[in-house]
Length: 187
Figure 1 (cartoon, one colour):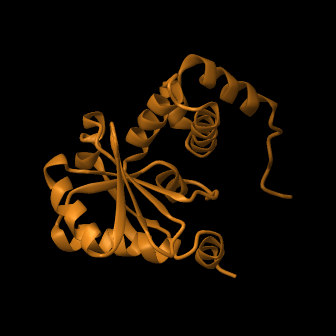
Figure 2 (tube, rainbow, N blue to C red):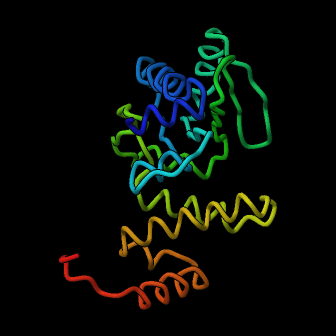
């Protein structure tokens, strides 16, 4: 069974809804970047998430919202996000309206997300966004723990990102890497 089939078996219509959202963005020429767990999955071995987090150019949010509402999505508004859902799908689409993420749009790169070519936050931006989320005392502990795990996963695959981590996390990663036995490639 392919990874995308496993994902869809857990997140009903998750990949097709994600593909539809990306198609709406691409067809409209909207500047966007995938951020959050799906973006991390585009860089390292994937783990499960039922959320699709994106940032969209703020001046394009209203047009995008109208397009999704016209396709049967529902909308919930929050202080710094718009959350969309489509009937029959378990995928939660979260659009960040926090201006701090707008710079990610200029540095986004094309990657495969759920088998869909999409603009994804650059690795450095992704790490900085995850650090920001991990550092937010208003976030639930479980969300911050997932952010920390994502940062560790990235650091293990991209050691050059370790220097960006806050000192507490950097020390943990360096200690962990120091405990790992060196392998010669002959298992």
